[in-house]
Length: 58
Image (cartoon, rainbow, N blue to C red; front, side, top):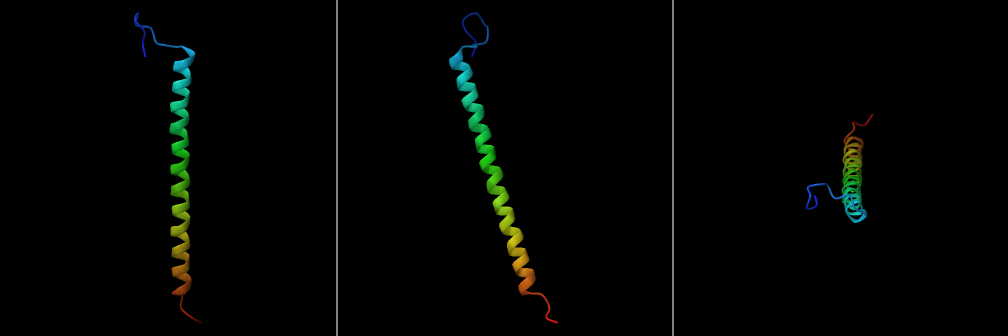
């Protein structure tokens, strides 16, 4: 946020707030990545189970 003279606010408090906001965004991205990864593993597992259960017998 700029101050009265139009310069950007580089106070320690502002830097801490920006760092915390970025950290929160990064953490949210990690959780989304983990959720998609686990969901994908389950899809692959169900497809493999389906393939084994419906394989022709020899």
